[in-house]
Amino acid sequence: MNEQQVRELLGQLQDPFLHKTLAETNGIINVSIKEEKGHVSVKIAIAKTNTPEQMTLQMKVVEVLKENGAQSVGIRFEELAAEALEAFRGQATESQAQDILSPLSTVQFISIASGKGGVGKSTVSVNMAVALTRLGKKVGLIDADIYGFSVPDMMGIGEMPVVKDNRIYPVERRGVKVISMGFFVENNAPIVWRGPMLGKVLDQFFRDVEWGDIDYLLLDLPPGTGDVALDIHQMLPTSKEIVVTTPHPTAAFVAARAGAMALQTNHDILGVIENMAWYESKSGEREYVFGRGGGPKLADELRTELLGQIPLGQPDWTEDDFAPSIYAESHPTGQIYLEIARQIVEKLKK
Image (cartoon, rainbow, N blue to C red; front, side):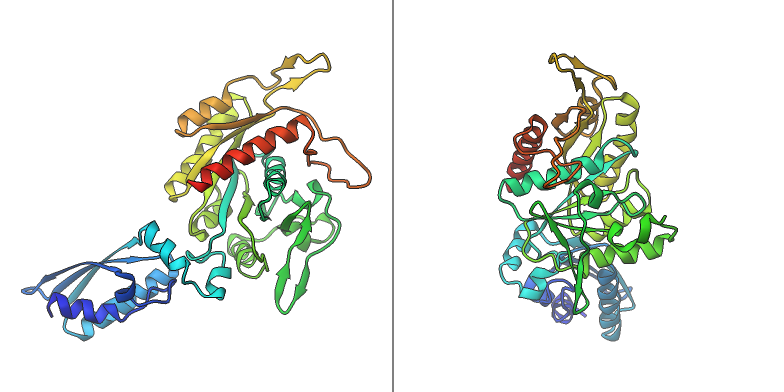
């Protein structure tokens, strides 16, 4: 075989995500042949790497080349350039565009992570989701903290999702579409499932939920760097991550691991939010209950920026629209969340 024959043979195979041939996507980057050894090496670009679909394509490439005379085959994969993917997004079919895990989807994922529990990650998640809707964005929120789900209670959600034609329709609250393990567990029962079963639940949250037309999908991740958080990072085509910490140096030290995992799985860090930064007394004096400096230090360590500092306190509750963890837009802390949301929107435009 010569290079042209290799390109013609492989050019007929399809990119598993774009459903276009490798010839159409210009996905055959390089071909190298060692005639004396019968060895063919190819470098192929596809929409998303490190997936089961890549493995299936890899087997097809080996099969096609060996059927046509290659003694051995070497394959390297890389991802198509962002500009190329953007061009294909405009040509996506409706079903491709609605599959939020497809590289052709325009939904932007924002993961909210922390190194340990108890730092207010879920509080940040629900308030960030609501703040983004206040800016006119269409937002979904997955409570992916499978063992420690709390989003429905925090948002004051009383109703259940509707299941129709094997599709799950999320509950909408304060303009945010919400799905949570809490909807599918009776009487606050503990979760005793193993990793593989949890992976299937998370896959359902992405694939079987009718998210409709949304701009952002926020994920309230489990704390730390365990299996569930890692599974989510590997499922997503791409995501931006916000790391939540308290000012305490130990919390910031532990949170650095969550940021490091995001970087190792090729997800960008949007920035750091320091929660419980201070307590403001009625006289207006700030008391730094958990110390100072954790947020800026973590941002510096992760080479990102401090998006904002959230003080200790609770929202003003009303009986008419009870959502125990959501700050009103007019509340000083609600204004902080709104400013952070503006920063995020601007960052994601770039």
